[in-house]
Length: 261
Length: 343
Image 1 (cartoon, chains in turn purple, cyan):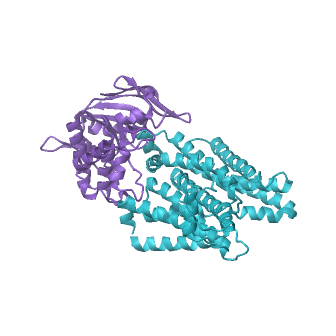
Image 2: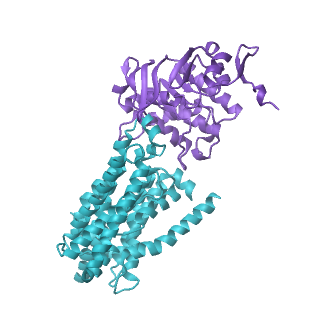
Image 3: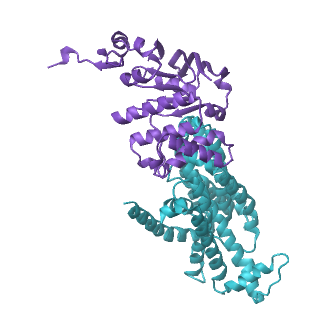
């Protein structure tokens, strides 16, 4: 079960958003796209989800995604949006249950098997505590776990996550990343994410794709892509790349001297 | 009250059943001639196959029951239920709590066509509903066409704005036609303010097939309304063909509204307020809101009609006046109590 993009492009209103995109995500592998704002990270993710019309070859397990009906696609690929809509008044449990939608006929109702899967996911993500609360009242970290739970209730083979930690505090960021890491290792689920947090990404992901102006300009393991030189070139930011005692990469911004008082 | 209803669906079913039963009993029993509830019940049972019961009603009472009260009550149930369930569906499809059956130019289209029918003298009492029905569907079609011509992508907001534009235009046209034909003003007004007057079962039988298709269709699709609640992108990612589902629900809701408007004129407020009241009492899932709206909308309109025909008896108030006059304060009351409960 793997995702493979070759020469993928998206053009909206005669404006080329991304082009020539090639990347692959194997089962259990975590790939992230990084890059400056407006580089096209989200568009890459949306093309995989079928939310924008894309040219080129997008294949899931050898089948063209264009030939896969929305429901079939949703049984393989689940989406964790950057800013999920949380309908007020909906309990977390009901929200997670929405993840069963692609497994139900358009007019069918959930079976006890569906409810059992929901219970399983809820306990796997340790969100029983607030399973009966209104989804709209959760904190950012709690909500993100609920959204991941909904995605897992789809029983997908690939998770597509748009900046999954961008709105979270430090503890919740780590917690969410550990959760994703555990899920992909336990169930062999591939992960395609986007992020701005290079240090955090370096701790978890296998492959980094750096996107700039709609194209992938660098790709490889974090240690190869996250160098001060590459980051300076494409982000236009002055950074220091350090290594902590455990071998983890730290991307630390540096103030440019001329702006200092 | 709200948490218990949310966790115990049976309470909601019983409450809805009780409201419908009470409305049916009062609607049938009350009026210038009282028909005792027990006798009315036995008379109804007597008409079932293989049941023979003596109701003790006089011939006049029997006629009042079967030719006036019962058809009027059933018509009220159907119209109120349809307007309310359609209102709930519109609110879900547009994710907009202010959406109601009149939003898409349905009512304005019906109003214009009915006014044209009355003023030209082409519409008779029997064919007036048909005029209204065609006008209602025409109004919706115009709104869709305008919305679609603007462009894809922002369909929800664009459609609502198109509805506002179409409704304003059709209402202006209707007012113009009405002003040019002062001699039929009264007749037009009585239709526009809504009425449930009926003799016999004709209106009920005409309305029934539309009511069945619309309400059964909406009930079957109500789970998908909950999925639409997370927004278009996420719903697509969950495998829902959002555009097709939205159009199907809009067509079903508009069909029900058009049929209701055709049967009884423009009755405001029911489609907006009933789903909201249900939402406050029983939570925000459309699986609950739609069936409960159907039941409570029906009961609400029968109660409103009861007031319309008894308050100033022997004459009648237009039912649209009653639904707004009593519905608004009632709604304000629920709004307040729900607010206090949450605080």
